[in-house]
Image (cartoon, rainbow, N blue to C red; front, side, top):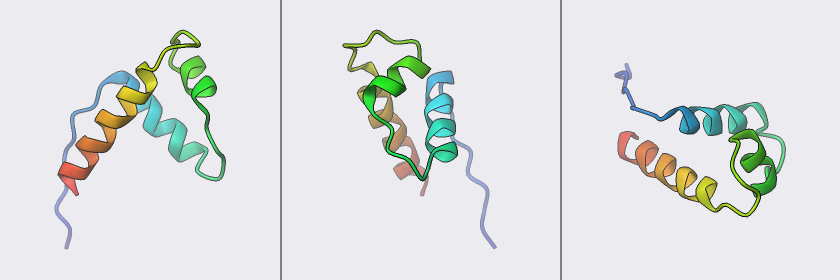
Length: 61
């Protein structure tokens, strides 16, 4: 039996996770992620948010 593990996510982390799940069969580029997250085209913020999401998920697994 597996125990439930709760992870606290920001609204953008939830959006990223949802995008990745819904598009698991596709390659998602930075331009698309930035558009979906309402970030500027040249922003690397999506990279940082994905990195933080990965760290959170790794800690809970």
